[in-house]
Length: 166
Image (cartoon, rainbow, N blue to C red; front, side, top):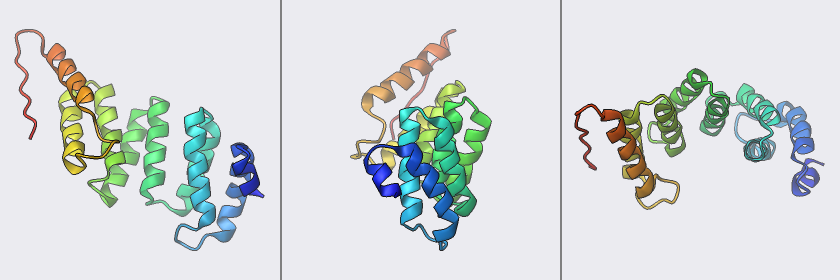
């Protein structure tokens, strides 16, 4: 039933069905139900249905509290709500599982930028770039220049900005 809703683009119906089915089918590893629900949560967030996306992520987190995908999804949802404290907590929890996870580091870089901590944002972006220099989801040179220019603007008052791309 949920597959029909999913393929027709009726994600809210599919999500409701899978949230009910998830506790009945899970084994401690990601089964098909959890994978579909994760995809639906991500798509709902992209479509702007944050309430239903949050419901999906929380249902998944109840069964998979250490899942990087779920923690990162919740972190990005918290950023969308401008709840940077919660976002940081989700990303820090994800970082414990995988300190080099691109999505986690990108989320922390977004938080640093929003908080005005551009030096930290730059360091995180450079770490992402060093981990996966050829990947399309890494920070582009244009984005690096933007963060650098923001750093330079914030230095203002005769301060110099040092930046070395290592």
